[in-house]
Image 1 (cartoon, rainbow, N blue to C red):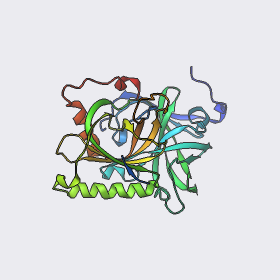
Image 2: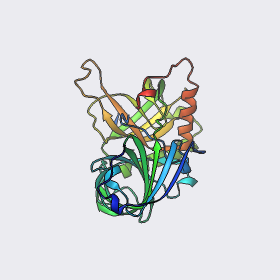
Image 3: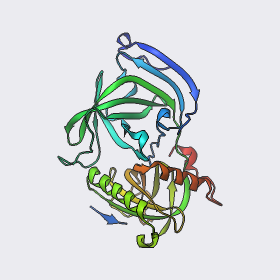
Image 4: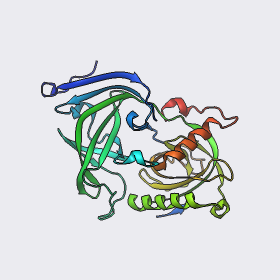
Length: 305
């Protein structure tokens, strides 16, 4: 039984719409979440099992959203007209009746913050009581270079989590990682995507060393040389098949193994979540994994990675 929120008497659900369906749409060195990778909302191209929507006069944050809880933050204004999927990590600093203060874990210097604009529509999703929870809202302002305030819509969506299928595969991999600002890496990703879209001679890109990774549409897991820490950013180039255009994605480290866990390992195992990737490249990854000949599904497909 779900616990009764302490302010139930002031929180009234005005509508409850129930259904159970599938969405129709779904510094630099060359060199996942293990919590979860969540699909995104059904009306915006996600595939999850939607359960119900609650509309509140006062949102019961204390029941569903806790201080320091990790959320996925997606800018969604105008998203339907682009081939881009953008997903940031955010942590709850403080939640009140109609707004929520969030902390971004990335390096942000004054004047180089993520380019939110006043009124930009955003979506926040996370996990509570064993289910996925999702709310929408609008960017209000930056409180400092690392914290921002979101005004929240009085609607809460509850859904059953569906993790991206994952598979151990061999791919060509190149990456650049470091501690640059998110805005800097984001601009570089946009530039890389434009270059790849206009490139006709793949030989100019150079070679892609083949290596074993655990891959999904939402991120990847592989071994890299230390040092590495959570929230480090990586520019990823994935050659799914030899002599095919690579997938370019901006990713963040969301977890890494303890150096003492495997002392004979030449590096650290890290899980990365894609921050920026094209929807068309996500589909390429899905198609590649579904047609990977002779590769059995990895245990991670059912373990929640």
